[in-house]
Length: 510
View 1 (cartoon, rainbow, N blue to C red):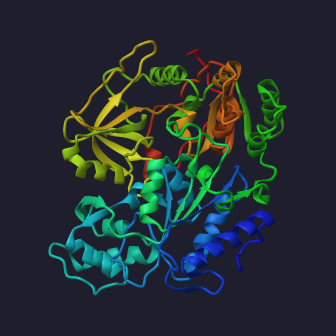
View 2: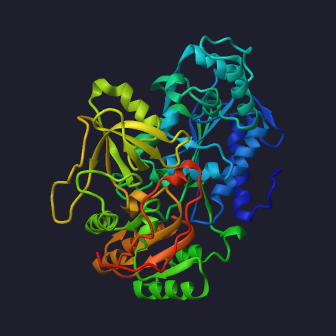
View 3: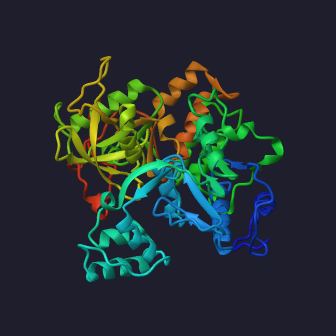
């Protein structure tokens, strides 16, 4: 075994076991050899562990090793025509946010939807893509100058992105991709991150495409709501599940992860845990004992709650302090995609919207009205091509009202809820630099005494909420909301650094 990092014993054991599985699939990492698979049967293995145990590090190491053997990495960028002797790898996550976390770490991940469905390319523009990918001669395209092709070529040499190169030539994604269809040709190997979020149907779809699947998941998270508390990797035979127990050295001394792992102690109740949070906040600035919800953070990092009533109350408070009118959205308001309301005859449009990132749970920012009535211009957070215009149905829920208020709506299209606050279930798979956890909700869960998969529900909720924070955790203990330090803005979506956030604004009740 050769890797660029010194692995812990449990990581090294998992690496060796997966290496054996890949060898059976015709990929020898030790000798960097590719051979035909020994069997066509589906082989599934899982690497599980809590936050900080090194799952993502292993995923990145396997990606580097497979790429070094000559395996072709298929991403949501552009998929060239497959050659018979080519072996393929796709690295997937259930949401754009989860995929973007991997891409930020140098791993070319995309969403499950972008692999389940493949784009139909315009033949003329596909010739440009094949040329850029090294599979064809420089094309001559009507309406496209030699200078435009030169710009595309220069961009691709520095950034291996076909859509980016086409954009440099003055083309849009809608010029290049004319539609979407269900994938017909299988791939070889699939890595699935955040696999605790997979439901049985997605798992079966993936097994149809990948004869070799490697799942990465955290058994301490929340199972999908329709899975009866069971995650797909928990149904695998014991020898096929490789569990990482040791916290990797890069995670040691992280107060956020220390708090997350303290939840596994059966002697820690809610009161003792809150004292641990308060003590951590006193000695480390990465943990904040919050006396109020910081409204400036809510536009990009939603407050995490358990109860829908709390979520709705926070959303209305957020809109109120920003002076948002009831009959319109302000530019910069956050939304969460709640699914697509499209009849079966519009299947092609559904596939297009899903492939662009408008899947259930996607976090988007409202940029303004579209050119057609009922359309919205949106920025899909974490998507590779984030700017989207889509027919939208926006629902603003009101406290103590059964029906939501709808400021505007198309007859059909993508449906959205407001995203200034979300439930912890919906936040799973996402990460933000700073996360605010609304502690009174977790206290309510603790008082109810509910359990899930043998553990108090409040502990599972707290674990998932805490581990959404990459750099800073704010544990909010009071029903108070800070005033905004400025109006909503979308400057940060134009590659402009966001303004620094402060924790000293006045705080009205909400």
